[in-house]
Length: 122
View 1 (tube, one colour):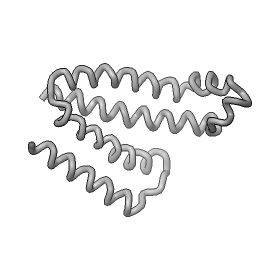
View 2 (cartoon, helix red, strand yellow; view 1 turned 60 degrees about the vertical axis):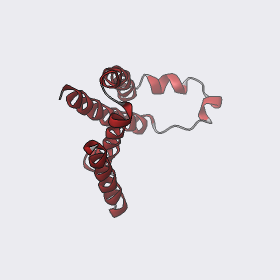
View 3 (tube, one colour; view 1 turned 90 degrees about the vertical axis):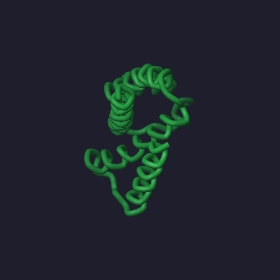
View 4 (tube, helix red, strand yellow; view 1 turned 60 degrees about the horizontal axis):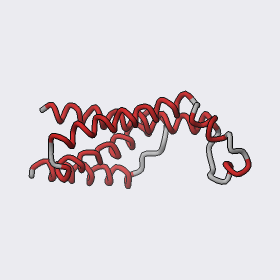
């Protein structure tokens, strides 16, 4: 049971990190790899954007949560559960960022959810 709690925290943290990174990129006005050649300090400005920085910190925390999870269970069993973060990002992006929720995304989330349920049965 403890593994599922840590896994849920990991998924919520991953989704939160993605939302923070998106907000940071909105705040920074976007990013293009080509901009590094023109202005190398663009990376510093992006990395120290509060949203981006916090999102990256959450990813570091997630690594340690993941170490705990995979130390206690089969990787082939638990890894598919991470795909629930994709489903949660679709929902959170719609609710919190005002992104479009198309029927294709809804069907995709449904397929992911069914897939995770199937894996959880084995």
